[in-house]
Image 1 (tube, one colour):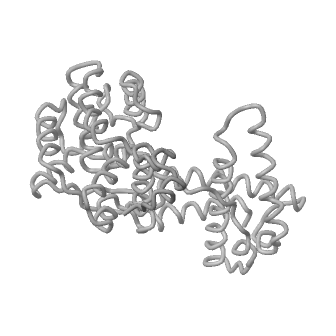
Image 2: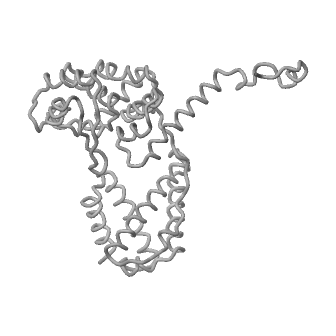
Amino acid sequence: MTGAELRDAFLDWMRDEKRAATLTLTAYRGDLDRFLAFVGTHVGGTVDLAVLDRLSLADLRAWLASEHAGAQKAAAGRHTGGADRAARTRARRVSAMRSFYRYLARYHGVTNPAPGLLAAPRFRASLPRPLTTDQALEVPDGLGAIAASPLAEQRDRTLFLLLYGCGLRISEALGLDIRDLDRALSAGGTLLIRGKGGRERLVPMVPVVVRALTDWRAGHPAPLPDAPLFPGVRGGRLQPAVAQRAMRVWRDMAGLPDHATPHALRHSFATHLMEGGADLRVIQDLLGHVSLSTTQRYTLADEARLMQVWAGAHPRAAGHGPSHDAETTTGKNDP
């Protein structure tokens, strides 16, 4: 089999067996296309299973060096988010390549140890950037106020209330059908959400979200069971880009920071639960995180926020107050 055929078989396996998200499959296809193109040039011939099986660690390091050089060339003369973003991209490409080789080892007998020995680029772990409680509470009404019609106003207000009230991804909310809401209302207000990789989780709805969704269903333009819960102007499923654009318009009007996006409401949901004392495992289940370490980022974000508050409010943080020498002279110490 050629490299391209192996790539396609791997992506089919990721889709069918691993239930990988569409965005993941798209990113991996692009990453593997780049990898296979480099290997073809590097070895000077057709890439097939035998070529992939005999690539050395030096070959893979040459590929990674080529990726680094390409990132530097692309960044020349323009701002692309810095070296950290480029390192994240290269790390993802290494991850795609390793996943590809694990598939080849499992189904095609490849025994090459080099991919597991290649060190991936390091980058700083980003922390979630939530909105404040007041900002998050303002979003649904703010988005509704700038909608183009009364129907769009109710739809947008309900959508963004759902995002913050249940901590959903925008794709999860827009993927809901009328039947999903009907099932949730008959089950006492618990939504069945299909998240990344087709994984399902149950998310309870607070009363204000239940009321908003019930009212929206009553005014829905075509409440058939298989109709999208949040339709666009032509009746099809509302696209994430439309909701994201509306959020950008409103945040500019309201003077909110650039990180005020639909996904920031999910971060806000988790952060505000944590600030209220919710258990980390409960938050993990509500968000649908596979790994607890992903949810633990919110504890780090909360610690960072507390340090910012401390630095801005505590007199010692800014170097104010009596000096150490003065304390020594008077013989007084902090209690």
